[in-house]
Length: 167
Image (cartoon, rainbow, N blue to C red; front, top):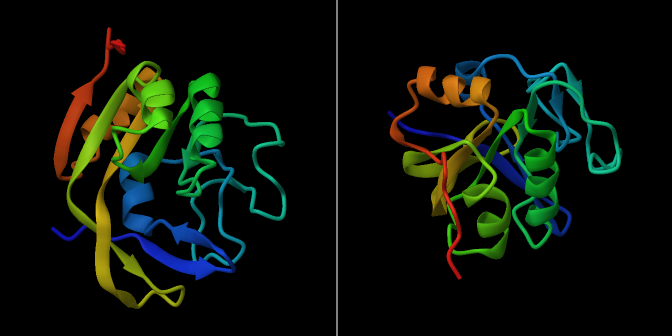
């Protein structure tokens, strides 16, 4: 099975669109605070874009988070960890400070996706290369752990009950 994520460069940052099969596999979401301005399909009932500044808006219900993959990622993961109800899709950069602070010690489970995520162009056509990093789905809250378990997305699911950072 190919795992695909649709993406494009938007001005000086990356803007990633999640394929509908992935979001549908995880169930319905109430909010996507990092939705692209232009999107061919919904990822949640409510969408905030870069024009709305999703970090400053209220978050309600179950959140789908595909955050900007730069230095600001920690702010987004922190917000989801504090919200405690949602799933994030990020690179599996397990050595980063953001991962240590907001995933290992705060999330309930992670699903390391088998294979590399393939980018697509905004029009939905496949991009020329796969991602340079593996991807992970991060669950906050038990119903989101259950969603990862039931989604049948190829990969390795790890529950983080009792995980602690040493050092």
